[in-house]
Image (cartoon, rainbow, N blue to C red; front, side, top):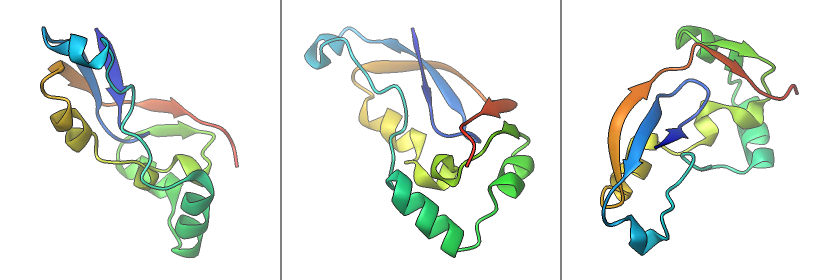
Length: 105
C-alpha cells in the first residue's frame, strides 16, 4: 500500500498495486510531480500576486512554513497522474491534509 500526494492542499491518494504492476517494476509515482520547476514557480507566482497563505486557508489547510515553490499551482493534477497509472494501481481511499509543514521562504 502506498500514498500519493498532489500538493499541500490537494487530496492524497491511498493505493494498492495491481497484478500488472510487474510491468513497472512494482513501482508507482509517489507524488503528482511538478508542472513548474522551483525557480519558475517562485517567479511566476510572485509576479502573478499569488497568495499561498490565502490559498491554503481557503482549502482548510493549516500551513507551517510555506515557500512559493511548494504551491499547489506548481504541481500536476493528481487525478491525471493516477488515471495514467490505472493498470498498475488501484485507488482504495483518499484523504485531505489538515496541517502541512513545508520549508520556509
